[in-house]
Amino acid sequence: MAGFGVANERLRALEELEREIGASLQSAGSVILELSKEKPQERHLDRQAAQFGAAVAKVEAELSAQIRYLTQVGIFWAPSYFVLPGEFHPLRCVSHLPR
Image (cartoon, rainbow, N blue to C red; front, side, top):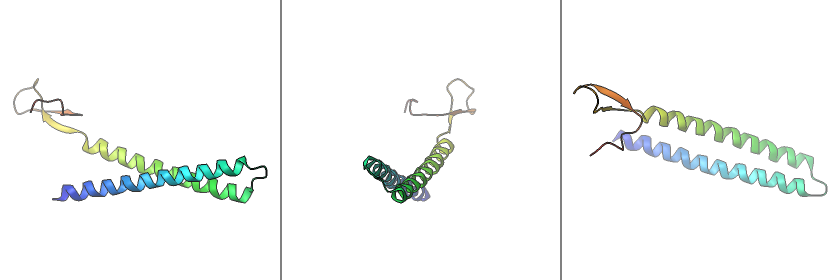
């Protein structure tokens, strides 16, 4: 069952994405905490801001990849009730079709 392998891979990618979102929020929180100090340490701010930027870039890239994948597999070819038998019509979602 190759389909389960792809599904498991996608789920692992989403779990990693969730961890990366958490890391980016943690970095943002550290930046805000440092900025709230009377004398923030510029080196610490730079490091945390760089970590935040890297995490956001990684999240953006992975979300884009997930959206591209879902767009590719989300287009189904299903028979339409408005065309001749044997013809197929692309549908975005076939969940509304009677079973």
